[in-house]
Image (cartoon, rainbow, N blue to C red; front, side):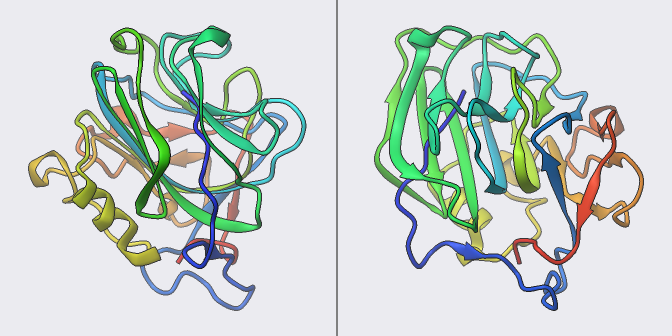
Length: 245
């Protein structure tokens, strides 16, 4: 699925200056080069109901750039954004007919944003910086199916270009109050008990935190354990100054 963001105003999270650091809790993000950087995982969508949360600062060029996908090329379910230029859209399935534009606002505005996607059967909802916006609730024409392939973060038919942090998946639909807690007024915080009746996300990749900003493995901090660790087969670039805080 691909999604589009609303108009961003004062709620946008500005890039942390070079001397800023992570303010204590958050110290790293990962920079994707838009060429061949992506993360493989052991996580598959558990069914037609799930949620995804992430902090992103995209740099969009021509063609598709992807936030996540459950296969390279075509799939029944995907999280992606791309060939509407600088806009986000949602796609359910591999065909063009399943694409849905949910906002016409640009996302490459030089700021960090928190994005949450929730799906419950055929209902799709998108939150940006803690709030839904007009047009961001969509009922699909047919029920979604569970993914059969492991999720890849940053890869589809193209590659994500920009910075990404605190990527998490739940096998439940998050509530609006869960989203408010995740956004935390624009502050990156511990999400280990958010959603899933307090059990937190099944998969949660902190993009350098808990791994010391070294190596090519991103340790899963969710309840799904080490079989859902992330790995960068083409190398990884950690960022410690331009991060959401």
